[in-house]
Image 1 (cartoon, rainbow, N blue to C red):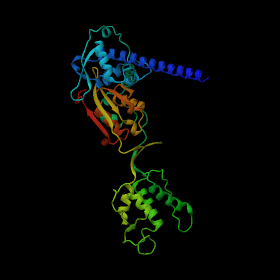
Image 2 (cartoon, one colour):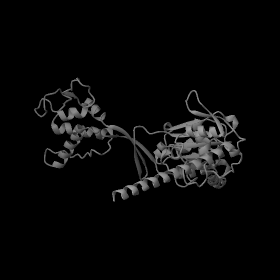
Image 3 (cartoon, rainbow, N blue to C red):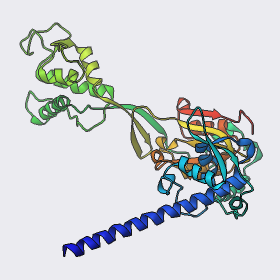
Image 4 (tube, rainbow, N blue to C red):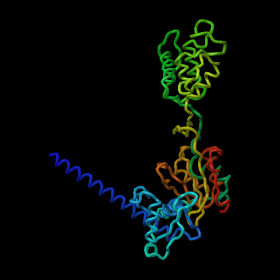
Length: 399
C-alpha cells in the first residue's frame, strides 16, 4: 500500500509539474506575440534606447493579444524576470540590450527589424485596439454633445446631466484607531464595565475598543477613566494620591497605557500630569486613519490618502491622459470612464493596472491631453479636494 501511495503521490506531483510547465509555456507564447507586435509596430527607433520597464509598460502590455483572457506576467513565464527575457531575445537577435549606468536596469538599444521572426509576425488585434473600439463607440455618442461644451472645463465640471445623476457627496474625515497594548485595552474595559454595571457610581458611556474615534470622542474615553478612578480629585481623598489642581494622578494602568513602549529603558515614569497632557499622550497612542464616505459606501484607509494621479503622455503616436488612484475615493472605474467620455467629448478606456501591488486597481485612459479638464471633473463632479489630485502634464499643454 505504501508503495502504491508513494507512486500515486509521485504521479500527482509529476502531473502538477507538467501543468505548471504548460502554463509557463503558454505565458511565454503570449509574451512573445505581444513583444513581436510591439517591436514591429509600436517601438520607434527615435525612442531608443528604452528602459526594459518602459518597453514592457508602454509597448508590450498594450500589444497583448485581445481576448487572451490572461494578463501578461513575466513571473508566470519560464523567464521569471524581465531582464532574463530581454537577454534571451537578444541572443535570438530580435534586439540588443545594455545595462543602464544609472538605474542598473536592462535597456533596449536597437531593434533588428530585418529579423525573420519580426518580419514574419502577423499583426493581431491587441487589447489596446479592443479598448479603443469600445472607446470609439463612446466617442461617437459623445460627439452629439453641443459644440459649446466640447473641451470646456467649466461646462464639463458643472453640467450634471452630462452623464446621469451626480455622484453622492464625498466625505473625508480623520479618525483614530485605538492602539493594541494591553493597558489601552484595560482602560476601555474599565470604562465599558462601569457603563454596564448600573448604580449610582456607574458612567453612561459605551466605547467599543474595536471602534474608530474622533479626537473628541477618544478624549471622552480617558476622561471617563480618570473620573471613574477619581484620578482628578487630588486633595479630596478620591484620588490615588494628592495632585495639584488641573492635574491627574497616573495609576499603573493609565501610566502603562500612556507610556509603555514609549519611554526608554531607565526613564522615570511620571506619577501625575496636567489633564491636557494626559489627553495629548492618550490620543498619541491611537493610529490615524481616514474615513471615506460616499452615499451608502464607506471605507477606512490607514495613514494619509494617496492622491488621484492625472498624467498626460503618449501611447504610440497618440496623445493620451491617464487617471489612476480614484478607487480610494469610492469612484467606480467604468462609471468614471463613461463620465469623462461624455463630459469631455473624448474616447475613454478602462484597463487593469499591472503589478502585484495594484491588484483590484484600474487605469482610465482618455484620448488627447485632458489633464486640466479631468482635474476639474474630479473636483467639481466627484468632490475630490484639489490638494489630493496630483497633475503631471508631460505634453506641456500640447493637445
